[in-house]
Length: 226
Ligand SMILES: C[S@@+](CC[C@H](N)C(=O)[O-])C[C@H]1O[C@@H](n2cnc3c(N)ncnc32)[C@H](O)[C@@H]1O
Image (cartoon, rainbow, N blue to C red; front, top):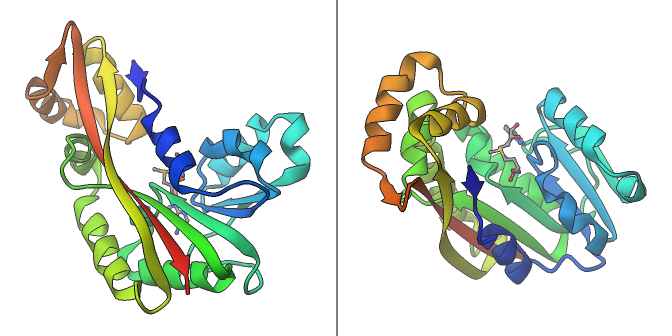
């Protein structure tokens, strides 16, 4: 399996985000995907409601980065930090994972803990990629993604201004249908009972040489707290 072999996600994050010497909040940090950015920053706080993922993030953190990072269990909609604590906040594929009724609260909470002029980076799926059609088989993502867009349109102009946004495509290559099914089962909690549906979708994906290509549509937005 080859995930984003061009490293496009990393390049976009580095292009739009200013991390150097910044105090960063990673909301929905999972197992600490953005470990590689830590050396640039002054300090990183990663929060996630999953006890298991926070433990994994802590366990995977190299000793030399431990002084700069805190991973703690928490939710985006109830941030346990003082007003104007952070220079930059990041939601990477996490805002649409917050339940629809709390997404707006999570954005307002993030605005509260950001310093004035602070940066909010949001990475979300677009509705155009194939990947979201796979994840939709196990849990609804399309409606939460649509709701994120509605909320952002309401908040831009009130709490944030839109600095820039880009859309791009992340590519996943699989050697076989079996490999793709195993990956989707693990990453997106697809139950075994859904294999037939996954196989049907896989048949419609592009083939590049001998590999199956699944494309994920991504949008990155950079907002400024006003
Ligand atoms: C697709 S993962 C993204 C993980 C990581 N940010 C990344 O880019 O790889 C979505 C994450 O959102 C987290 N999440 C779910 N509900 C949340 C909430 N209410 N507040 C913050 N994070 C939440 C999940 O636990 C999960 O780790």
